[in-house]
Image (cartoon, rainbow, N blue to C red):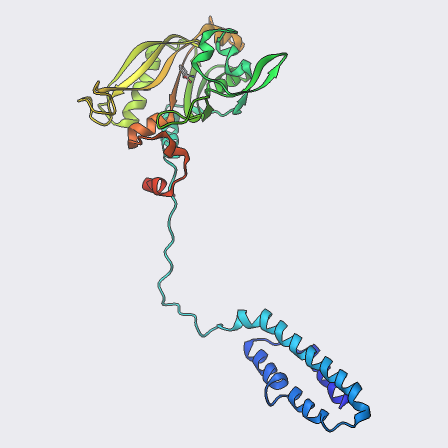
Length: 344
Ligand code: PHE
């Protein structure tokens, strides 16, 4: 009997099935109701009393080995091979899967980039955490000047007791970086996220997105600015969209203007969107102040330039009529999936 058990033990240890059927055959052979173990226990009844102790132990260990092996095989191979071949139906229709959509701000950003690329503008980027110089001083905001209050700033760190490091309040900081590190001509747009310390509501948020633009070269004039932005608006909102410029103030441009377009919703007839004026404001712009050029090491006698900046949420709003700014950052799938687009 001992020799028999030794032989079975070796067989079990060496057993390596190729499929679930072989595992089942193993179970029947060793553990089944008419199996080897059952049979050994029958034989055990006939063993003399003096041998019962030793054989009882050997037999129990053997049963445990067979059980353990079967459980292991069942886990490893049983599940993976069970349905092999039989259940595979190649004629079943495939599972549909939802195609994602682009975020409306990405759509707008890509569209704006496309339009300006065709005019020879490149895309420039810069850090969202900025120092006072790039966000303010180089842009002709004098220290303590009230113009700094136009943009409620999130300051992060002081330097020598003075507020210095901040979350950028506009992407004009990227214009400074570009001019400091390169040589004119510059023709670039700067899309990116900006931050302002505002209470969050349907009409204001503590962060939003801008696209600013910069064109510096010899003989750049206000008429270049007007024509560039006019072309941009025709491309984005369609031919026939009217534009008008109103005088404005920014520390970094002189002269400065704000640009309105005829209301994209009512076409100028008057509606809620345009507060019944027929016009909506979309951007600020102007000729780069010579002080800014000089701050960035550019000869303001030789070069002139124009700059402009717009809020992407505003542009998206006028295109898709999104009344609540918060929708842009809530990641509500019911909102986002309305912007199905071709992904390729
Ligand atoms: N940086 C300005 C803002 O954030 C926008 C602007 C850019 C205005 C360039 C004029 C010229 O409000």
